[in-house]
Length: 348
Image 1 (cartoon, rainbow, N blue to C red):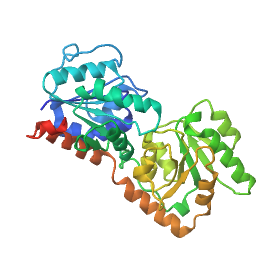
Image 2: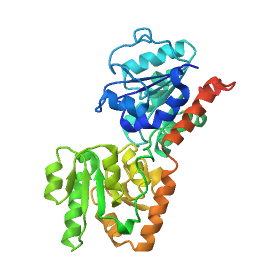
Image 3: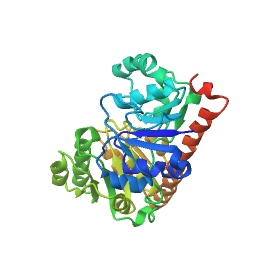
Image 4: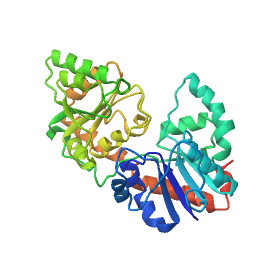
């Protein structure tokens, strides 16, 4: 079969996830992407293949792109008109379309309305969905997708880059935050927690990787700032950190959580972080309130050597469930359903 994958703003980790499939399919696979934050040449090097740049907005056709209509088309989201136009064309040629969706189940009016939009507007052009993990499965069940048509493993970091660090007791940093320095990431609550814990006499060392309008607030709270940088640099800092803290009010999955788990870090995550359902248990971290993460951070600082050792192992074990091999397995399951005698079941 001819296969095409369209990923909006294809990130470095996405390229690394797909690399094994790219190698196995060779010329039968076409990769499409809109312009993302990273240079095209870097993405192509990580992917091991050429990418075709297209616009997210406006109409598009396979003929305009100079490409044959594929038999199997995977694309991220349904928010991009060009991707939807390509998907409709694949369906008109009796091909299979799988949408990659990273949203999570939220009990809000927008999703109650969105459920009907999905069923009547988008569902006729989708045979299956690929989601990151359990939070995505919950949403797709709510939207009425058959369980057999939902695949997991959309997101994940590369274990060749994010490798286990030393025992947690030997690491220099108590906490690490990674992401945008914006309100949605729970920065205000994190700053308040840092100040409260230090006022209690706790000597904690915390770093933050990222950038954003709240950078100055973090610096004033005594947080060591590191700019967004290459994956190798992030991995090195994670291997020297005991706990990732991510008190977001909303974070659909959070690849950074998987990066930290691969590094053997403990996790402090809010209920707004979708990947907590896949990567956090009572044995490797704590759930926190986005506005008041200090209770969970205090428990992390008080953890003894024995608990930290088991925490390290639990994170590594849970991390094994995601990454390039999981993505590869999900893709070939989709491929088998698309070519097999039960293809109709994918769209049931």
